[in-house]
Image (cartoon, rainbow, N blue to C red; front, side, top):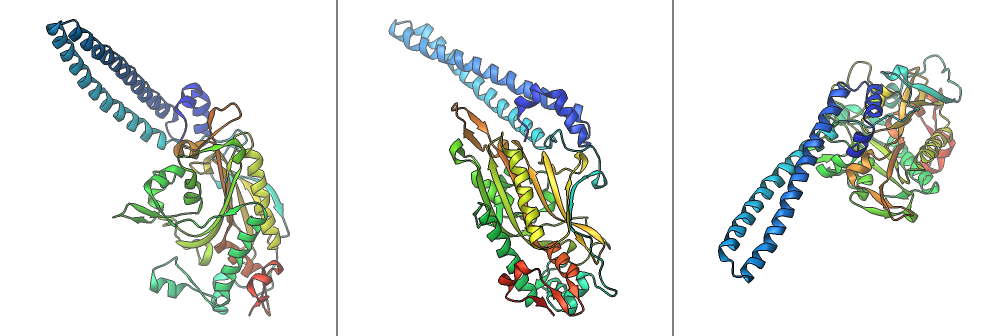
Length: 424
């Protein structure tokens, strides 16, 4: 959530940033925010004035009683009671303005970093770097959804029977490959200095609002209605919320956490004939990395996180590219995002397997996540997160790119984790 002081002081810059996102009616929305803020401030000033007058009246009552001026004391008591009632009304009005202002702020996305490319859709994203050769497979090579049937390692029909479409069952070497990838990613994150966290996979509304899933992505999350709880879309949400309402010391920074969780996404309206196999699921496994950073060091941290994810892909021997998202394709809460995409040789297309983002103070403002700087001033921190990595499309690319006439030869880095070198 943007800070109201920032909006007041940077109105034109803010509108320019929102226009870069193609955010509708940016001028009108910001004017509505500033008008609501002014009403809130006017009410606060009126309340302060009434409370000050009430304090004066309360002191006068005691003096008048001591002086034996009973009639004047009674009048002062009446005036004090009137002021108290007025302060109650103004307090209610103030809370109303604050609630309405907060709801407006919740619906304004983050402002893109100045280096974010112009553009409306994914086609306008900027390719920053590409690694590895694009493979050419042998005649008769299969896409992953046929390979998993051939080797009987993932079963979509069983998942459909148990739950529904988008909930696959992993079995045999397919299940072991999942576990191997999770352990590999967690071990690599540990080596990079991340503390492993095993968080809950169900969150409350406060957590959803804290990291920006609510109200923006409410329709994309599975909702447990009676308890008002949600299944997590990513481990970023519970891990970042560990630091909600926390004030850190500067010498505690950076905070670096990693965690494995299953993730749940309704993906409402996103299914079609072009979506097959592991390309899009309702439930999937992912290892996340999260950083809580000093504001002056967060963009260096973003680059560091991107390098970490790139190294994972290189160790898995997968061709990949790094894409900087344009303004129109940027996530609601992000100021800058890199997507990592692997090349699927059988599908002959790029598959997104990770996003790494800097949210600057956007989440921290919602979370009230702050630190005391060297001058003992309280400031908002920057939050960052990245997928390191999401498994489904990684598995799809490994299966497709490593298939041979003798079976699927797994990347060497996974052999100690799987206990086997080949799926056949």
